[in-house]
Length: 231
Image (tube, rainbow, N blue to C red; front, side, top):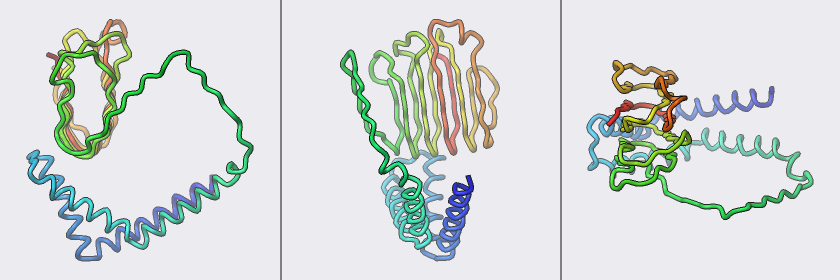
């Protein structure tokens, strides 16, 4: 356990020194302020025209971070620590594992769109499939009112940094909602609005366990409002 504590302590010290040196440099400080300003501008106004400037400034900030000597030291220390921890398992005798599938495995692949506003299930009525989103910035609207939902195995998982999320659920579908966010506001069905401040909450409609059709929504975000409505 002490090895993990030592690793965490050294990483915190190195990354703290990296942050101090970046804030001390005028150019780095300007880039950080520019990125934060563009993120707030995008969050409040949803402007698409500033996407190029936002992406360019984030790329510039990435290189500033990665070229910082303390960040490089933190990465090298993590690499050495990982090699030391993994060393006993490298020369361990391999054990073969055979997996036999009785049926063909169906593979669905979809690229993540990290930026921009997205509408899910908004074009055509279709069979529901589980949603697993990874987003940086953008507003997501998930339309379930025209989607065929069956049974209790319907899951929506959203992990995002900044942006609002709206989920439209049919009248005959019960809901379980789990939210973990740093700052935002929740509007859940007919309930009063609730401020979210660095907390995790779980809401379940009364007939969730007895209903024929349900959907489970898991949302983890840094900054953004959440709205769940019936239609």
